[in-house]
Image 1 (cartoon, one colour):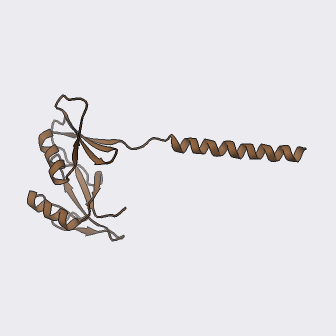
Image 2 (cartoon, rainbow, N blue to C red):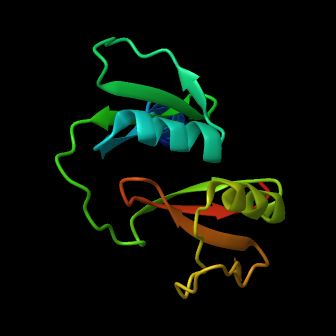
Image 3 (cartoon, rainbow, N blue to C red):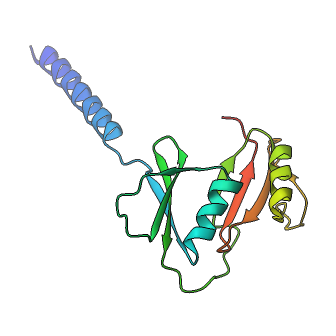
Length: 153
C-alpha cells in the first residue's frame, strides 16, 4: 500500500510539473516591434520603403508623427518623428534584414548612392562570416546601422 501510494504521488508530481512547464512555454512574451526615433519622418520612411522594400502598415494614431512598416509577418518597425538631432550610433547596435541576393541588394544600393561597409568598416566591401553568410552594413538617414545578409532560414 505504501509503495503504490509513493508511486502514485511521484507520478502525480511529474504530471503536475510537466503541465506547469507547458503552461510557462505557451504564455511567454513574444517580439512585436522595434521603434526608432527619427528627425525627418518622410525621408526615413522613404528609405525603409524604397531601399529595404518594406511595406507600410496602417498606424492607429493618425497624427502625422508615425510610420509603421512590416519587417516580417506579425512584426513591425515604427518610425517616430521626435528626434531633435541626428546622433552617432554604434554599429554593434543594429537591426538586421536578410535578402535573397546580396549582389542584387548591392545593385539597389548603387542606384540610391548608398555606401555600404563590411564588418571591418571598409567602404564598398561585402564580408563573409565564418558560416559562409555574406553580409554588409549600411546606415539609415538618422545614422542607425542596418546589417543586410543572405542567411537562409
